[in-house]
Image (cartoon, rainbow, N blue to C red; front, top):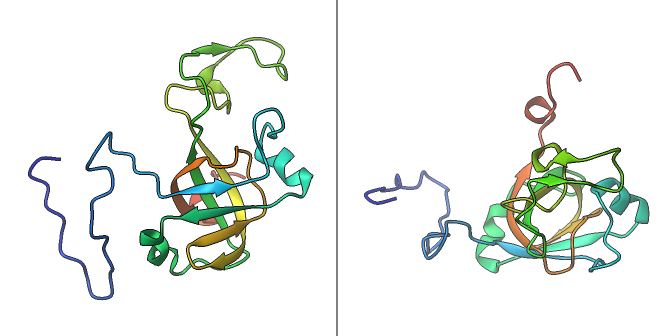
Amino acid sequence: MPGFKPKPPREGEVTLDFTPGSDGPGVHFIGRVASPWGPGDCPRNIAKARESGKGAQITLDPAFEPALTGLKVGQPIIVIYWMDHARRDLLVQNPRHTDGVRGTFALRSPARPNPMAQSVVLITSINGATIGIDAIDCFDGTPIIDIKPWLPTIDTPPGL
């Protein structure tokens, strides 16, 4: 943003020596997924990926390793990733698992105008800039956009 000046860091805060996204469309991939999946064998969703019993890893750009501070093994996190092999032109889809057509925004399909996906996963290990996770439903090499802690007080809808 023109004229935007970030506030100075508070005591104990650590900053990057560059501004992510300043050189392009605003999205900066922070790492990549290492998964057992590729075209033709990737599970349709995170539940199916968990049923397989196959874990995965997220390897961050080393510059982002300090951002893992405070995360712990066994903790659930929200992983947001870019489905870089997905179609981006479908507005209405006819999935095999439904009884008819549905709008893209009524589905969790990777085919969407901005092919972002998210899964809540469990951390199985943390080693430097690499996070082991219990499962993921995307191809090996999928770019990671962000990681956030899953917090039941915030992420569980009211009444559930």
